[in-house]
Length: 143
Picture 1 (cartoon, rainbow, N blue to C red):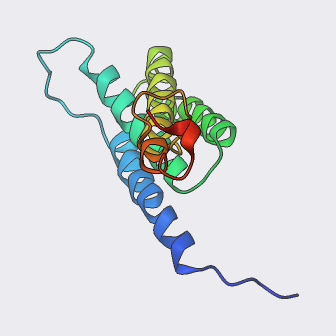
Picture 2 (tube, rainbow, N blue to C red):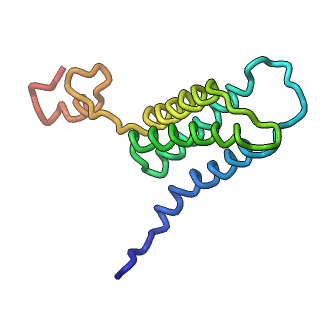
């Protein structure tokens, strides 16, 4: 049996996801803090931001959109169940799962819009620079 080599590019793409996952796990599974925060529902914002980071880095690692959505949704449910079973002040909250999934989708969408391929310009585009620069070659394209 031959094991294929992993190239440096694959490792560099997966590293942000691995680091983000470790930080999120530390935040989710460490004992609950005793301090009360004056901002209501700030924990939902924190959950959404954590899972947005996971969604974004999952796509950076070239995990597909559907696969990223599925693994993050499963992780959201499992993490809440685990928090409910922990003995040190954590509780399970279904609204945290909702915040997690919304955050994950936001991170996936952010990656999509940040890294989507540029559309090739067409002749109908108002800012079509390539048609104007090559119009000297084709008399039909001259203004």
